[in-house]
Length: 159
Image (cartoon, rainbow, N blue to C red; front, side):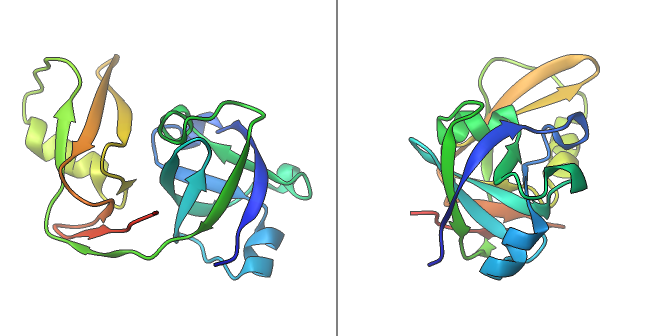
């Protein structure tokens, strides 16, 4: 398993709450990483994210752009260093999302299914989502890590 250590920087606004990590495309090529692959982001804890190529202005800086959800799940902050490596994605039957506080969303099940499409999640990992000007936080419980798809879910175990 090939690992590399990168410095954490803030995700750009367009990438927030999407569960993606952006790294230099040259590093991706060198390590044989493909766009959209599941990777582990290892700080004090392990999180997973979907890999995307970095922005042109970030090339050669040895950084990883991740949002607050991924940083929180990996227990890291801005300028911390994290190890990243590929993890295998496998089909999962379901995931269970639990809000961290009471909430009411009309059509909530459909809404959550829509925002979770192609998102990679981990057991115990949390995600904050914004809708109608309100931020809600959901945690994944009782299932292995996974990638949500169109009525199918994949999971991965970053351990």
